[in-house]
Image: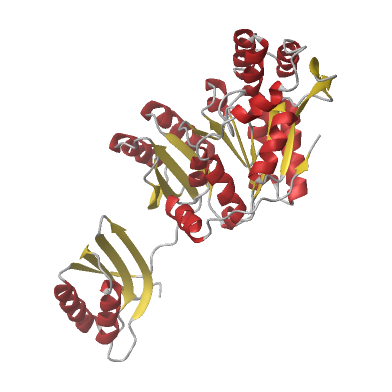
Length: 410
């Protein structure tokens, strides 16, 4: 086939049922001896407009083929272009990657910048597919020829920052369809806000606790020391307040959709939190999570003592939890995804196959492999190549979702 003559037939026009069948009927009918062979096909529909490209080896029937296709296109009221050449499509080059671009909105200038950076790194855009148009617009670019993935990632990260979009770069291959483990931070990631600040509001020390929390999330304070200092301010608080705080907790928009979709795909989902089991255990049961790790507030005689039980879930602990959860799930680290917003998530994000900073502090955004700066947690699905249409179709076909059990790491 490498030296055989080929024809690229491109059909454009208003899409409707039967167009593709009519084109292939024309191609089939043109070959009296039946030797017209399909080499490659690409088809896309944008706002009701079809672009159909068919690469064929016409054999001895080239003249008849051209006439038959032109007649079919005329009958369909569509435009046709036929270009001759030799050989099959060139194989895609090495260095294959997926680049996901998300914008709210996604502007043309941003795509121009992204495409320019890809070209400057010597890579080629082979295909572009839309994954969603709302609540964010996301596009997935299949590229090849990238010689230095890290250099491309750095260039695209700078472009994303300048253009106000989010970009993730990850390798192509069969592994993308394999089982994954997704591990999430809880406060300001899975849920909105910080639980310890909700508790502090009842204790009358919310401003001081919020100040310490913010400094810790920026990486300015040791997390364990900051946690113990904040918990100490809660000493004497009645434990019944925990029930009120638990009722006040609100999931981040898109959290249920994210977890429901991941579970349908047979992925496993975990949380690892610098917060407290008194809150996270309820989330595990409610959402059907597989694994969890969090601190436990010490309670004596119905009052918070101002201390925690056992080792603190800090930055290093989170990374170890990710590794242990991966072993329990039977998933290699390369197939893990971690998502978080604070400095205490950095080791976990670095350890995972894909580390995602979610509405994170600048320090975390700079160091993470990918960043999401939209308020929808299910935007993570787009980074995994899952489209909004696929999610909605699954929801429509299966409105129920069965919770699963949980293993809690202490």
